[in-house]
Image (cartoon, rainbow, N blue to C red):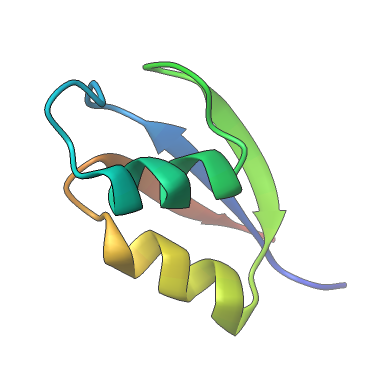
Length: 61
């Protein structure tokens, strides 16, 4: 079974750089406290690592 990540947007996007907003949108997050589950791939990890100050994430098995 493949691993998943639960990713939650914990900070507002007000005042955030446009590139960072696009990364958050690419993850499928729309508003504060919105959570999504994504496969744990290098691409998703890279996106999470671009904006760690906006997100909270946990590994699911």
